[in-house]
Amino acid sequence: MTHIRSMIDAYPKDLIDVDVTKLADCISACFECAQTCTGCADACLGEDMVADLVKCIRTDLDCADICATTGNLLSRQTGYNAEVTRAQLEACRVACRVCAEECEKHAGMHDHCQVCAEACRRCEQACDALLTALK
Image (cartoon, one colour):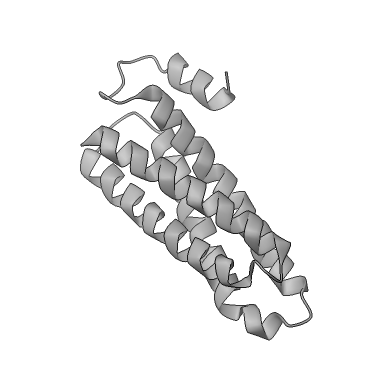
């Protein structure tokens, strides 16, 4: 069991009607994606042809910020607001899709972009699964 799941299970009140496994998986995917996107942006900055990667860097950093915020929001259960949660999950899903698409363009030349695209696709799927469970 992960610390994420342990914290969810330790919450002192009843949780919203949600699949706890999907919630924990989504939180984990969001934080993993945030770290991976940050690392990819940094690796892009270290490439010799950094000017060709400006859009990728920007997309990585935007995705990292959105994923970190989503992970934080999903980690808080007190005062839960379904409308805000759904909107944030949708934003995260879109950011991950856009970032994955951009990184996939560079994946043939840069391994870090391939790793990032995979993390983004995983997070996109986790957000989608949780959104479906919340509807």
